[in-house]
Structure formats: C-alpha cells, structure tokens
Amino acid sequence: MPLESTIKVDKKTTLYIWEVREELAVLEEETPLTPEQKESYNAISNERAKKNFLATRLLLTQLGHAPNSLHYNAYGKPFLKGKDFISISHSFDKVVVMISNKPVGVDIEKKREKILRIAHKFTQWNYRSANYSIHNIIQKLTMTWCAKEVGFKIHNKPTLTLNDVRVKDFFPNDKETDIKIGNTMYKVFFILIEDFVLGYCKANK
Image 1 (tube, rainbow, N blue to C red):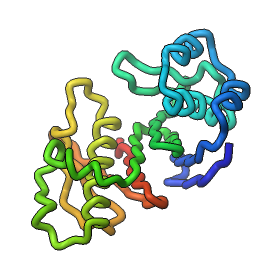
Image 2: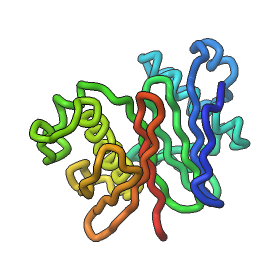
Image 3: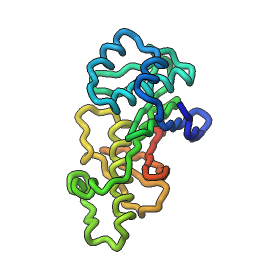
Image 4: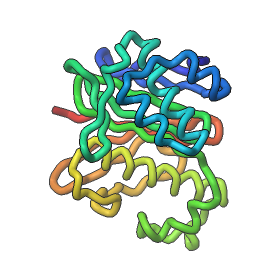
C-alpha cells in the first residue's frame, strides 16, 4: 500500500497518509486480524468500509504495531496498547492515522458540493452572503466540518455533539484556527491534499 505522505508534527507526533489502491482480495490476504477483528470485519457489508477497516490495520502492522494493539472503547474511540494515543480517519481512498504521546484528533474529508445542503446543521456562517467563489465556500465549509470532527475526537466526551464545538472564524486559505469546547481551547491545523481537507489537533496537556 503506497505511503503518500509522512508528516512529523513534532518529535512525538506523526501523521501518516495513505492512498488505498489495492483490491479488496489483496487487502484480505495481506492484513493479519485477530479473531475479534475478523468477526467485526465480517459484519461489514460495504466494500469501501471493508477496505478502510483492513487498510487501517495493515498500515499499523507496517508501522510495527501488533494486530491486537488497536482497540476501541464503547463509544468507538480508538486506542493503542501502550502509552501512545491514536486518531484515525478515512475518506474515499484516503486513510490517515495520527499517533502521538498526547491525545490527538484527525479528520480528512473530500470537498464536495453536497456540504452546501447540510451546512445549516453544523455552522451559523451564512455562506450565501459571502463574497467567495463556490470553490472557496465549499473549502471553508469542509474545513469547518473537519475542525468540529477533530474537536469531537480529541475531547472524548460521549455526550458531545458537533454543535458543542465552537470554531473561530477563518479564511478559506488559512492554515489553522481555534476551537473551543466548554472552557477548553484547541488549535486545529489544516492541510489541503488534492480535493481533500485534512484537519488535526494535539492536546496541550
């Protein structure tokens, strides 16, 4: 599986970005799974979801983690055995894994016009009155969605919703913004990759 990019955020935090090109049969042959993981895998019906499931675990194996090192809590948050923290995201053929010594959150989303139809559900920004091109409107909305997803992942509160994550206003070409959840502030960074937006965050403590 081709490693598209490795980004060293700091000495103890790394982003791994892959593009999944393999056929499902190839991934099934190459990915070691525990009995519990096989049971979870067999319950998935969507082919893309199956690929993402296998790709994530294959990539962790390639990074030196044992098949049983990845597990999830009751709310679907991933954990690695040991001291490291992990966050995982996938969109279409992109898979992103972020590993750090502190809690992290990562999200990758493809920029699509459909986000215009759901914008009112996650932001109060009135894009219709914005003096931006449609490209920049879609990009900013996708960045806002990513920032909220990142906050949801890093804050790790089961009752949290996307509307509880407040995003500081920013311009479509900005590389970072701030989010606030309750009394806690986080810095979210953005990376634009082809038709995708990647957002990530690392806890200060």
